[in-house]
Image 1 (cartoon, rainbow, N blue to C red):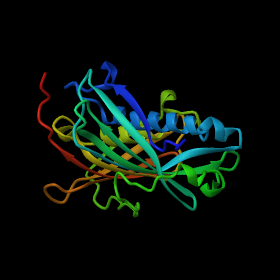
Image 2 (image 1 turned 120 degrees about the vertical axis):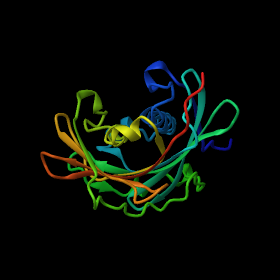
Image 3 (image 1 turned 90 degrees about the horizontal axis):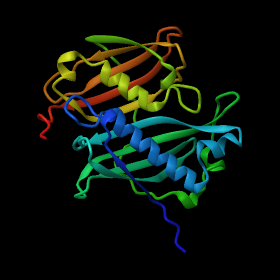
Length: 254
């Protein structure tokens, strides 16, 4: 029997996952990707729970998401995910999401590492991640170059890591960083536009009670990119670096 390399999961957009116009939050879409990845890893026996038994765990290193549109409350979408490569310390995972008419909602690619639980050192994925699971098809072609830093500070915001921000690894869940990025934008952008493309480089862990600062640089011109960095104010460490494009999707229709 041929092994199925794709994993598909359906999600319904629920009332607590939408914004003031009834569209799914970016963090909701990111959570769908994470849950599809979880389901696939459980099916194939390389989930966080399986790795914990070996003294290691998964952590995400990079994300690149392109959103065609934001689905509405009550819609059902289908998320497809697959392992798309492995290189040294990094395993790649890609995603596509479609609506009921098979129109693309989003595409995404991501890079993951396996680290030792005791000392947080990375482990080569070749030692734990079988070749038979890899399908070398990419949803987005991205070799994850270094993201730029903020050179001109235009906006800043601070947040506190909450208990519900933590995941099974006891650090801030990767989806929370996308929420901080959105909440760290100026008010006039938040109430008129939404991210159409987001790249995140996760650089260090954050934990319960940490005070987080998001600094933001505006685009140099129309259709330009927003640059953000997220810092842990207690340690001074940079915890994430982000680049995004935003656009006005128009008012949602009932």
